[in-house]
Length: 283
Image 1: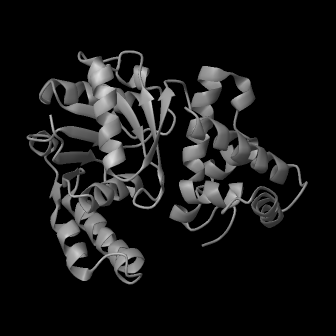
Image 2: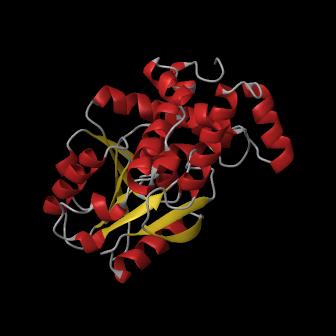
Image 3: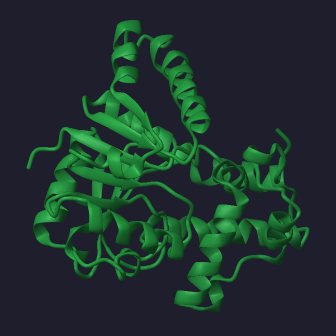
């Protein structure tokens, strides 16, 4: 079953990036959210990103950018949007109950051959699939922010994911010009589990007054050749996202993954990072 049409559910930072990426590689994309104004704003942002990071840098032509935009269709009717698609990619908030409900509903309305993929960065694919009947067609395709640029995809096999679905999802991911790593289902997978520990430890170092946020980030960038320090990264991803990842990892893997009290306090105070214009830094 060749993939030509893709449905992306959720038009936030990750959903919009995935939609742009898929459209860039020739796929027709139905982008779904609850409000048409949200979707229009998202498409405007995609247009600006294409112009700023691709057209002005001579990576694509103006005509190519227009073709990419024309492949992205906006839809507030999810049931209509998944019709005639071969893969549905979920990019909603990291909440297990929300994802389980969504996949159960998608499982009921999508053709049995349709791949149902989650872009979750940490939640168990096996658990996400629990309320669905055809659990074998549910897989994790973890993109990285910004999706049009980052080269990696973590492909996660749930306990009931079939070989056929996994292989098709891998072929699709590779068609996006990504390097794909295969991962057995486990909370946090590889990347989120590792980077959360680093970022959380950086927050603890800051909380204990061992070094400033700037010096922690400079030390990591220069010592480990990181392009971005852990506190800068936490601000970029969202401090609330890392807090939720930590809570989930602590519940599933043990107390050693418990979030720093400082991170918890920052989330309660609305210091979420770039999206709130203030986190470990001001923006």
